[in-house]
Length: 68
Image 1 (cartoon, rainbow, N blue to C red):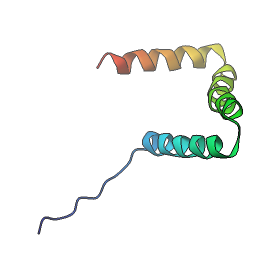
Image 2 (tube, rainbow, N blue to C red):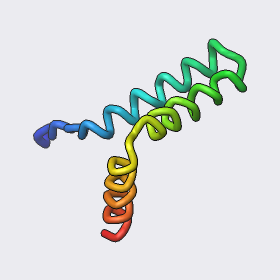
Image 3 (cartoon, helix red, strand yellow):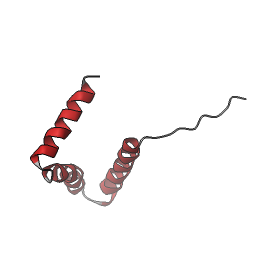
Image 4 (cartoon, rainbow, N blue to C red):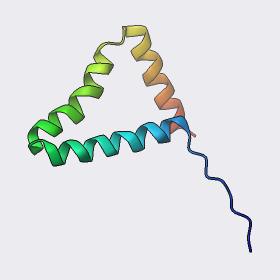
């Protein structure tokens, strides 16, 4: 019998899974347009709360990861 490997999720993966779960729950409980507003509005609002230097750092990190 093969040894079982433990699956370890990164912090970002856990956040993504949680976001998908919350999105599905919102789609069930709310009208689709309200759920869409929340799903798109929360990340947009979080981005807008960053100051300009934090936004530049976030964009630079994203571009660097795409270049891998």
